[in-house]
Amino acid sequence: MAYEFDLEVDPDEPFTDNLGTEIVEFALGYDTDADLVVVMSVMLVPVDDPKAHDLRFGIREKSATQDWKVSAPDYTKEGVDKYVPREWRTFVLMRIRSAIQALVTKVKPDSITMETYYAGLEQKALKKYDLVCAAVYGCGYDLGDQFRDPESQKNYWLFTKQV
Image 1 (cartoon, helix red, strand yellow):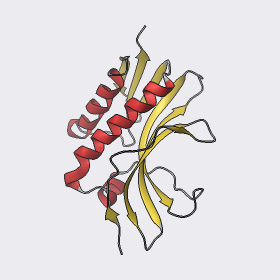
Image 2 (cartoon, one colour; image 1 turned 180 degrees about the vertical axis):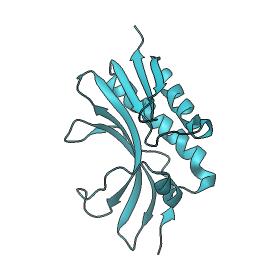
Image 3 (cartoon, rainbow, N blue to C red; image 1 turned 135 degrees about the vertical axis):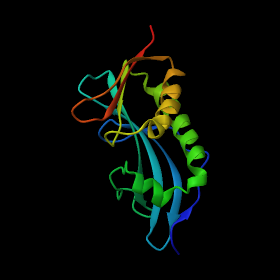
Image 4 (spheres, rainbow, N blue to C red; image 1 turned 135 degrees about the horizontal axis):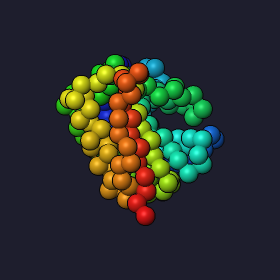
């Protein structure tokens, strides 16, 4: 049996890993032959400032039988193409937004950073970040700064908690 898309619509509450990263995961599908569950991991990763976190979301492959066996997050378009059918991508993005809201509400960091994985993205490819930003705004944060780094050509966002 090959990979089967089977989106989980009721994910668990946020949890903290052994590095202090706050995570909400929801299943995207499974491959029983490969003993895999494919999940979307939405993460708030602590950065140097203890009250700041970096917002990340990526696809992970997890063993269906060994909890410790999990891949690093895949932030690539190829990963999305492999695991999320085109007609389901908007719905998956809405699940990511819900996960962001759950994480930010739990952690309440003073500031949140975010950056694109790819450099030089066109405006069309940046549209999903408007929806991600709206989720952060809805949790009581303002956009402190947004820019494209002239050297790396990556886009960056800084959100600060409203006072």
